[in-house]
Each structure stands twice: as C-alpha cells, then as structure tokens.
Length: 320
Image 1: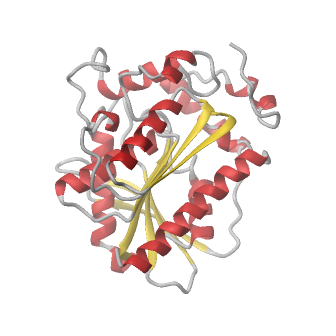
Image 2: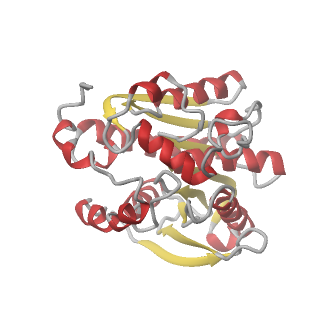
C-alpha cells in the first residue's frame, strides 16, 4: 500500500520497517542499537535523576522507577507518572530517558518513569498493577518528592498511553490518587482490532495490524483478544463509563493503525463530560515522533509539553 508520508519522515521509513516484534527477545536486543541512534536530550538546567525501588502490588516484586527532579524554584512542583511504550512487550527506562528528561526540564515537573513488568513473561494485569502501584507511591510520597499532591498526572506513549488510560480508570474506580490530567500519546486501547485504520494498515512502519495482533496476544494470552474474557482495564476502549476522569490530551498519527481507536476514545471522553484535546498529525506514522529535525515532530513535542504546562497551571487556578 502507498502512503503519503510527510516528506521529512519518508526517508526514515525503510529503516523502521523491519522491527522483529514477533521475536521479542531479538526485538529487545535491538533496543540498544535504537538507543544509540536516537539523539540524547541535553537539559537547559540541571535535573537530578535517581533510580528507586518502590513497593510492588500485593506480593509482587518491587517496581523500579526513575525519578527526575528539575532544579526549579517552583516548589512544590507538579508530578507526572510516565509509562513508556513498547506494545506491552518492549521498552525501558533507558529508551525513553531523553523524552522524560525533556518533560522534567521544560515543564518543570517531577517525573516518575516506571519500569513495569513486560509481557509475555508477565501478562495482564502485572504491568498495569505495577503502574498503579507507582502512582500510589508517588502520591503517598509527594511531600518527600517535592510534588504538589493536587497536581499529579499520568501519561505515556503507545502501550504507555493505553496503560495511562487504564491507570486513570483504576484510580477513579478504586478511590485512588486524584489525577489532574492524563496524557494519552498514540494510545493502544482496543484489543478487538476492528477500527477502519486497524483493518487498513497492514504494512505501515513500526506498527501495523500484524504487530498489533502479536502485542495483544503477548499481553492477554493466546486466544483471548477480541473475546468477552477481556477486562476493560486491559483494553480501556471496552470500558462503558468514562465520566469523572481527568482532563486528557489524546494524540494520533494519520498512518497508524491505532489512529481510529484514539480518536474514538477522545470522542467518548468528550461525550462523558471530560475536557479533552485531540491532535491528529498528517503524514505521520506510529513512532515517527522519534525522528529528529522534522517540523511535524517538533510540533508534536511542542504540543505535548504545552498541554502539560496548561494542565498543571489549570490545576493551581481551579484548586484541583
């Protein structure tokens, strides 16, 4: 299939079209090479970075998190619990280090980046419960972390966007920490794989229908996706009640099979009375925000940072 990719993104497509996602061991090994190829973010002001083990859910092992504390005089600062992408199978603190460092530096927020357990070794709900445990720890230790407990948000990209949506639902339904915002970047939300974009895009770079099938099979177990056995916290698009959730930013890419489920979720948030901002970036594909220098990439990053700043400012103004 031919796609009208943004001219500044198109040259990168061949290099990003051979992700061995089905072989997750090889794909994880390839993360080191990808990390070396990505430009490292250089903060404009010092940011303290500290690795911590926080209590895991129930009898599970402790959850590794990396805490980024900016040197800003705005104390207490807002806080963001950040959940990395990787289709529930890949991703690490290191791979998303520059992204998180940028947020801490340019937004002035303390960011808690979560190294949740990955599938298929740890299927749902292991990773999600790790993320929720990290949120609870962040809220309970807000004073020590220099975080304003009334300005805590959750956010992430891809699978991390889907997990962020699920954490927001869990926190509401369990009476957990109050969230002032949810950032759902190109989120993976629906195991049913029945949207028009999911049915159309079988050969798009980095993410396509075949990789989505493998991702959900790893996360839920073989033969579970698309069935009535899937819980709404595993696939937030299945949740029937979105009222009372925190304000949201949802981003989508034109040639991403996840495009339509992100748009549909944003529409449902609005219909449920949740203030929601939706961005659809033309000419882009899943993960194209990693490509440095492209103007659309710069716009995506700028929109993300500004939405977080506005959300944290609004929380102060409204006394959330």
